Image 1 (spheres, helix red, strand yellow):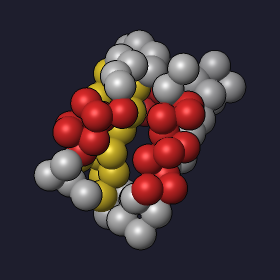
Image 2: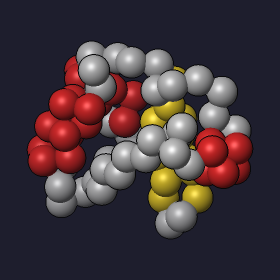
Image 3: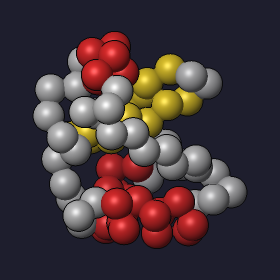
Image 4: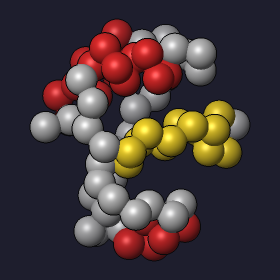
Length: 71
């Protein structure tokens, strides 16, 4: 449900943002490392460090609003 929106954001912001996706079931060590408690969870990283977290599915305009001051 969120994947197509993230794909659009990846294209629209390709010059400022890299979008990566993982399957939490396939990578439980990453889920544990970042304390993910529910899916979907989006974590924005800057210089390798998490700087913003969004939990739950949102429409594109709300995701962009949440990310606006980071990108």
